[in-house]
Length: 77
Image (cartoon, rainbow, N blue to C red; front, top):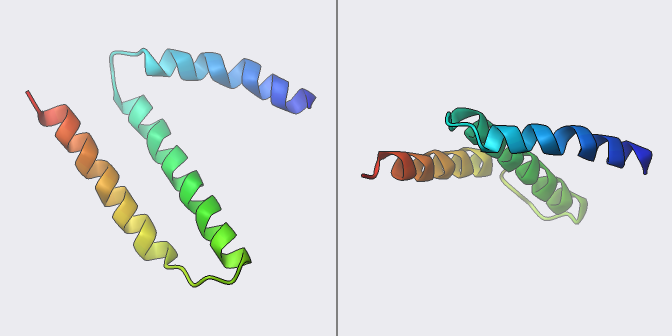
């Protein structure tokens, strides 16, 4: 329990500072890391209940989709 509190006290201010920076790239990096962690958890849960999954293909397509959305957001006028 103490470990969670310490992590929250350290990570939340750092995350808040990164979100409000004028440079969007650290925030995009955090989003990519969160995407990869979420995919890892989903695919491990699917493996645990013996459902066939495509880890590499799913990771590639989700990363391409994420990059496509970022490009649309930052190139629109």
